[in-house]
Image (cartoon, rainbow, N blue to C red; front, side):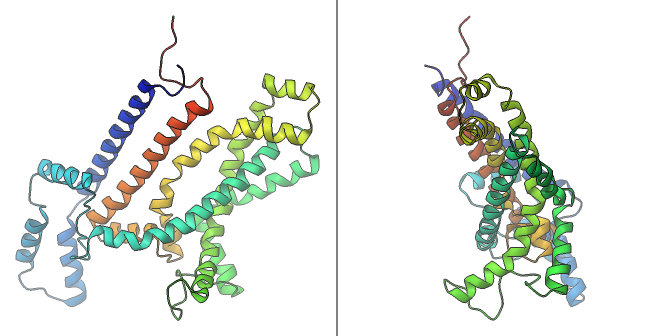
Length: 338
C-alpha cells in the first residue's frame, strides 16, 4: 500500500520530535548568550527609577539562587526540558510572582483574532489575484489592473502602519491610532466592547493584509503558469470545457497545494503575533508581550512565546505531511521496488 504507510507516519513523527527539541534548545541558548542577566537588569532599572537600592548585590545573588541562574548551564537546560514537557513555563522574571503563562495567556486571543483574520484575508486575496494573473484567459484590462494591487508589497508593513496612523488616525480622525479598545468601555461580550475592538483592529489589520498579500499573489502566479502547461490542463482545454471549470477545477485546485503548505508555515505568526505592528499600534497581543519581554530580558516569557511558535508550526507541518498522501497517493516514504 502506497501513500500513508506506517513507515511514513513514524518518520514524520520522529522528525516532529527532533524539530521541537532542536527549536526548544535554540530558544534556551540564545537569551543566555546575550550579555548580562535578567536579575541584574531588573535591579538596575529599579535603581534608575527609585534611586539607591540597599544591599543591591545581595539581592541580585539571592534572586539568582532562587531562580536557579547560578546552576551550571547543563543543569538549567535539563530542568528547562523537564518543565517544558510538563508545560510548566516558570515564573516571569520581570513580574514575579506572576507565571510566564499568566503573562502570555491574556495576549493570545488578541493575536489569534487579529492575525487569523489577516492571514486568511491576505491568503484569499493574494491567491485570487495570483491565479488571475497567471491564467492565460484573464481579460487584458484585468491583467493590467491586478499588478497595481501589489504596490503596497514593496513597503515594510511597520512603515505602512506608521503611514496609516498618520493619515487615517491623526489627519482624518477616522479610526483610533493605538490600543485594543477604548478605555471607557467595559471588556466583555457586549456590543460597545466588540465595536471598539473592531475599530481598533482595522488599521493593524490593513497594514498586514495590504503588505503581505503580494507574496501570496506572486507565488500563486508562478504555480498557475506551470499548471497552464500541464498535459491534463491542455486535455481539458481540448475537450472544450468551460473557462470557469478549467480555471477552478484544473487550474486553482492543482496550483494551490504548495501555497497551503506555506500557509501552514505561517501559522506560527498567529501565536507569536506581528511584533513590530503590535508595538507600533500598542496592540495588546503576544507580539507586544514578546517585545516587552526582550526589553526586560524576561527569559521565561520569551521562551514561552517562542516555544508555542515552534509547537504550532511543527504540528501544522506534521498534520499536513499526514494529509498530503491522502490527497496525492504518489507521496509516500516507502521506496519503490527496483
